[in-house]
Length: 404
Image (cartoon, rainbow, N blue to C red):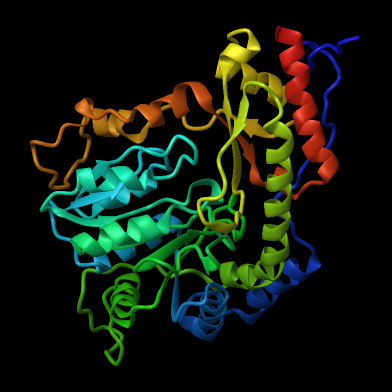
């Protein structure tokens, strides 16, 4: 006998919580030690910050790592340090968090949206070259959900056209592409430590690079324009105070001890979940095998086909799945260029050329992902058990049987 759907009062398929963040007394003690020291600011005790930066650089196998206040600022520092000028164009995907686009605007540059690959939801490398003009200066590939972009193809296009590549790896802590850590392949790689991220201190960000000149410039921009060897009240560049705090770093230094094990667990569960969901008609996990050797599954995404669920909308399906106890979400409701910010060009004081018109932009794959297909499962779920993965599949099958 078919069980009643939870959304209609029936029993939930999953009856447990998936806590996040994961912490214990050691995290509390690390923060308390900083509080007791009375040295909370970055300049007050910069050796703790530098210690974590060195540790993160070693983890990513890069020469340099630079902390900052959040992932958005990490991207902004990297882009400005790449010497862009007002009116320059920067290629980005339209299926990502708004910050990937707003940091381009803040640099007085023009976001150019290139559609995503239908099988991975990452920037479609085959479409980049057609979007390049004489004004193009950089590409920001987003390793969305922790799935590595096709970096060989992207780097080849960038090299051909002398473009900078800034990896948005805010979902990619610990993930790898062909054995290389995400963020370590382009000119710079950016991470977020915001509360939902796989490595978190509530807020915070990081930029990694192998380029000393780029590192020095980002360091200056982060630290109100100061330079190595300069005086405290000597300012060379248009920077700001984007420094992280000691409390955040204390937590991060403790949290990173868990990152490798957690990433491998997410990778393992994601691989297994793919194998069982692909057997359900109307459910298609995003494709693997693009070159990722470790997938961090900051989000687990599958493509939903409403025709196999009696034309049930993605919105209603997502509500039903959440009611069954699966921490899920319908994802972005619209592409970035459909946001009022872009449709109405509410760019305030930024010098975006008058000819730029986002009302004419169309990225069909992204629109289909937003409006019809994409369903997200949150990263903390991917730290569950194999039985939890089986129960996710069971919940989807339960919904399908109920609506057919």
